[in-house]
Amino acid sequence: MPATAELERMLRGASLRVTRPRVAVLAAVHDHPHADTSSIIGAVREEIGAVSPQAVYDVLRVLTDAELVRRIHPPGSVARYESRVGDNHHHLVCRSCGAITDVACAAGAAPCLTAADDHGYAIDEAEVIYWGVCPACSTA
Ligand SMILES: [Zn+2]
Ligand SMILES: [Zn+2]
Image 1 (cartoon, rainbow, N blue to C red):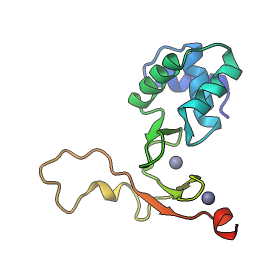
Image 2: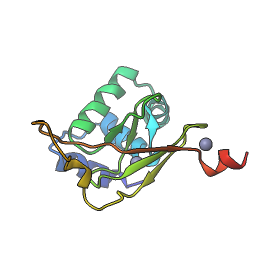
Image 3: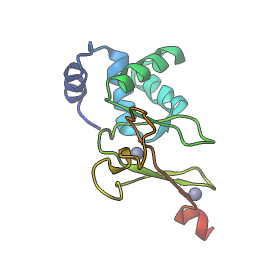
Image 4: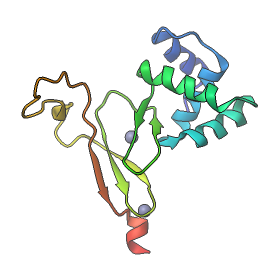
C-alpha cells in the first residue's frame, strides 16, 4: 500500500482536500483491488474507527469522479472499486466464485473506445469483461 504521504499527494494532485476518511478509503482501495463497498467500509473502520456507510459511499464517489479510483460493475455483481486507473485494462470474472482478475488491454491503449460506429454518441468508456471459470474452480 502507498504511504500516507503518497495518498495525500494523490488527493492534492486531484485538487481534493485531504481528510482522514478520504485517505483511509483510498488506502483501502489500494490494499484490496476490486473490493466491494462493504469490504471497503470494513477496512476503513479498522483504520479510523467508526465511519458511516454513507460517508464511505460519498468518499468513493468523490474519488471516482476525480479518477483516483475506478468503479467497475460486472453484471450480477455489486460495484467494485480499484486503484488501477487510466490504463484501460479489462477484467476476467469467474462465473462460479466471482473472482475478478485484471487483464491487460488486448490491443493497446483504449482501442475499444473507437467504436466501429459511434451512432453520434460521445463515448468516454468501454468496459470489457471476459467471463469464464477461474483455475481454482475448474479444478474443483
Ligand atoms: Zn472461481
Ligand atoms: Zn482491475
